[in-house]
View 1 (cartoon, chains in turn green, brown):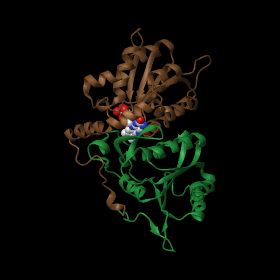
View 2 (cartoon, helix red, strand yellow; view 1 turned 60 degrees about the vertical axis):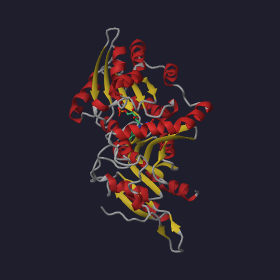
View 3 (spheres, each protein chain N blue to C red; view 1 turned 120 degrees about the vertical axis):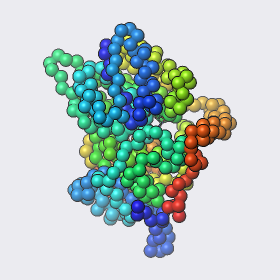
View 4 (tube, rainbow over the protein chains, first blue to last red; view 1 turned 180 degrees about the vertical axis):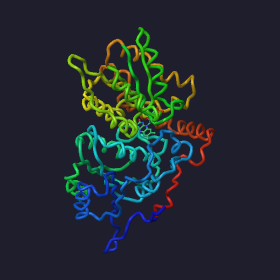
Length: 189
Length: 224
Ligand SMILES: Cc1cc2nc3c(=O)[nH]c(=O)nc-3n(C[C@H](O)[C@H](O)[C@H](O)COP(=O)(O)O)c2cc1C
């Protein structure tokens, strides 16, 4: 597995630079996705683009082992572990996916469901609701771009909730052609 | 009425909380002579039969565990294999109802998922018959037969209710799933009792062969 041990890279002026990664369920040669990544690259320095097509990624089997048996470690041994480490090493994640039935595709939802090991079984009250505690000090903030049959309003509300659960921040959900809006959201932070 | 129930958890049937909820719901639903059939998406080799059940039935109930505020990936994968239904002249649209259950206790935890389900039948050219939501379900299987059964027993009444009304009403569901949020007094009590709850979880998981601290950070070494 190739994973660097650095969380933040050092900028030209010696200050730390936010580490952005893209997790993409679309094919590498998908025209919309290529356009979006090239637009994003004009505003932010992307350290990694992970194309999940062709990777071996199983869906979560709901066994709760990553909470109760081997805390923090998923029992499924596939290509997801390297993605999880990259997520933990990053400051901001941009998910890119196709949308179906107004929501994300099953491939993207499988990637999200497998985030369970970064929470712990213990819960606490936050924003008026019980939420599980974070396992690590920080989880990357996130945004999502979609192609196809997505409901941006619903997806934004959903992403806000899952970000809260992960003690992270959502920068919103936009159509893939509106990647610039996501960049604007990043830059206004 | 005949109801085709489809469990949408990836978890195996024996360990699944959804499966136990289905059992309880079914007992109530069948009381007046109604009939049911149950299918499990965790059994991927049976997806052909489950698709046939979806296409061939007028009353369908998806029973779903909440995964990250919405439905699990496996359910979306199955849905993407379905075509919107078509009906010969005069035939009523298929009715789809849902049970959505999660681990965290308040009804508000399930509202985001419920919102998705409200619109889902439309994409499949079916009619929405409501969603029964309920939190605090994650321990059903862990607690063993007796205590687990107690937790899912209220679903029996709701099975009877669904058979009678053919849908879940919002009011009845909110009453079933309450509280929407915990009161300030409860939150205070929760904070006081939290160390005891944590000790209970810690001892229970230790007894079941936990290999590390519940708060272990196995990937910390990559995060210098
Ligand atoms: C990947 C994953 C994500 C979950 N996300 C939530 C959640 O967002 N909110 C919640 O209340 N419970 C959540 N849960 C808890 C399950 O909904 C709960 O334990 C449920 O009873 C499992 O049913 P099953 O045994 O049939 O799979 C999650 C569980 C898993 C495995």
